[in-house]
Length: 519
Picture 1 (tube, one colour):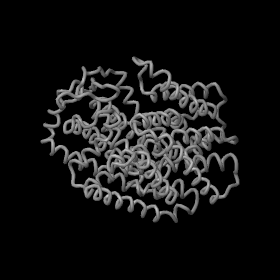
Picture 2 (cartoon, helix red, strand yellow; picture 1 turned 90 degrees about the horizontal axis):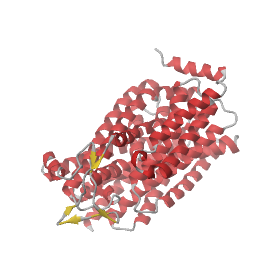
Picture 3 (spheres, one colour; picture 1 turned 135 degrees about the vertical axis):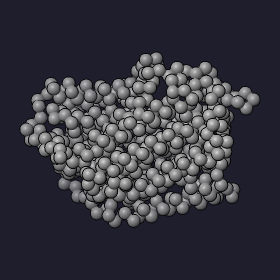
Picture 4 (cartoon, one colour; picture 1 turned 120 degrees about the vertical axis):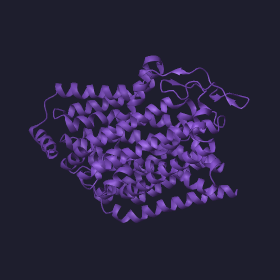
C-alpha cells in the first residue's frame, strides 16, 4: 500500500502541474475562437516542435510500440519506427512552411477543414463539411485509444477495475482541455514531450543495468526465432490468444517470413504525417515561418531518439520478464512492468507520469481538434454563420463532452490493443487528408471536385481495405494506409483533369504563395 501511495503521490503532483498550465492559459485561450483553437499563431519553435511530436506519439509510444516489440520482436516495431522518422522529417521539410503561408493567405484559416475550403474558394461548404465529419470520426477513435491507455495504466498500477479508471482519465483530460484550449494544450505538450523522453531514457538505462548490460539483453533474446531479425518475425505459440510456457520459458514457433510487402506496409506509416491535423495545426500556429527550420531539427531528433528507445524497451522487457505478459494486449504493459519492478515507488510514479503525459498530450489535441471541426466548421460554417465567438466556444465545449462520451464507449473493452486502434485512425487521417494536403500545396491544377473525390476515395478505401481486403491475407495483408493513399492520389489527379480548371483567382493565389517561398 505504501508503494502505491508513493506512485499515486508522484502522479498527482504531475497532474497538478498540468492543471496549473491549463488555468494559466485560460484567459488568453478564451479571448477568441482564434486564440482557443490556434493560439493566435503565437507558438515559438521549441513549443511548436515538441508539442507537435508529443501530441502525435501519444501513449502509443510508451505502450503500443514497446508492446509490439515485446510480443513478436523488432521487425514490425522497427520498420514502423523507420517509416515514422522519415515521415516526420519530410513533412516538416516540404509541408510546414508552405502550409503556414497558405493557411494565412487563404482567409486566415484556423482549422484544417477551413484551410481546405478556403483554398478552393468554396461558396457551398462541401469540402469543409466532409473534412470536419472525417475529423470527428477518426479523432473519436484516436481519443478512445488514449482512454484505453489511461484505463490500462491506472488499472495495472492500483489494482482497480479498468472501466472506472478509464473514465477517471477521460474526465481529467476533458476538464483540462475545456479550460485551457490550444495554448494550454501546446504549452503542456512541450512539458510532456520532455517528461516522455526522460521517462524512456530512465527506463532504458535502469533496465539495461538490471539485465547486466546491453550485451546481456541481446543474449537473452537472440535464441528466440526471428525476434531480432529485420526480415523475420517471432511467432509466440498461443492457445486462445495466451502464450504458452514450459519450465518458465515462453514458447515460440518458427520465425515467420517478413518480406518486402510487409516492410513497405510498415514504412507506409510515414505517409500518415501529411494528413494528421495535430501536427499540421502546429505548422499553422507558429509565430514566424522562418522558425520552422529550427522546429524541424528539434522534432526530428526527438522522434528518432524516442522511437529507438521505445523499440529497445520492448526487447529489454522480453529479456528481463520473458513470461510476465502472455497476450498481445498485456504486452503493452511492459513499460509499466519495468517501471514498477526496477524503480523506487516515488521515482516510478514520476516515470509513469510519462505515460500519462503521452496520453494527455494526444487526447487533448484530438478532442480539441474534433470539437473545433464541429463548432467552427459545421455549426458556424453551415448552420449559424452569424454565430458569435462566444457562441462558438460554448458549442465547442458541448462538442468536447459529446465526443468524449463516444470515445469512452469505444474504449470500454479493456482487451483493446492500442497499436491496432491507433493504426486504423492514423490510416484514416493519412489517406483522407494527406494526398489532398500535398496536392493543394504543390499542384495548381487541383480542383474542388478533385479534392472532394480524394477525401472520399481515401477514407472509403481505408474502411474497404481494412474490413474486406486485408483479412484475405497473403499479398493483400498490407497496411490500409498505403493502398488508400495511392487511391486518393489517383482520385485527385483523374477527377481534377476531368473537371474544369481552377479559376484565375485561385491560380493567382497559388502562385502568390509559391513565390513567397522563393528568396
